[in-house]
Image (tube, rainbow, N blue to C red; front, side, top):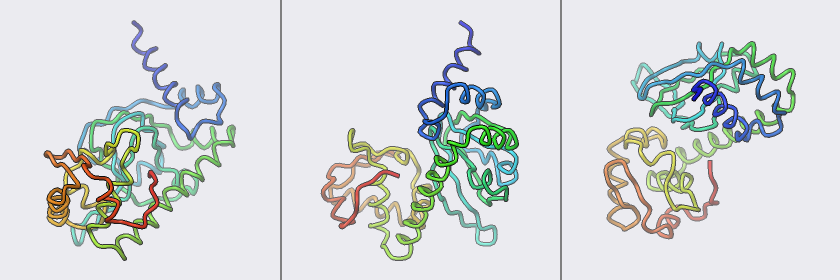
Length: 238
């Protein structure tokens, strides 16, 4: 078996399935892939910062990466997003050309396609259809951040945690996805609180019969009770 050829085919098929590139011709996707380099990033590694994204664009093939900011003075960290399969970064830097002060850490081993920013910009100029997809991607992120600010400012911890669980619930399988194997510390950083508070709230949900808890694994036992924590709340996925 030609492993290199199989990998190329795998990357190409992954790009074809990525919603961001749905309006891009096949030849243009091949060109994008030809300009990229595959990388394997180990788990639990602060792999890149704003200076790296100033020169390189990234497409996540598989894995899980958190985008966060860090206050050195107070040693506090705030997780903005969890990026997973088919996510990209950093679109803001790509479009504006300015430093976007966000750090990235792998939560599990992740496979990435790296593209030099100048090549990515040239490719966009040749494929302007991608611009609308990128703007929609940014709008989605802005809406998520807007919701986050409102939740932290106005909601109690129980409501914030319930919303996080619901937003990461797959309605087809009834399984919590993306955040299911995160530590309580990581979950706390997603909702703007501490590990101790999250642990206490998870135990409360467990006592109420809402959750089943096994180490990092969370299972929703009673969705109706969980929804009651956040009513009225529009069910949607991130």
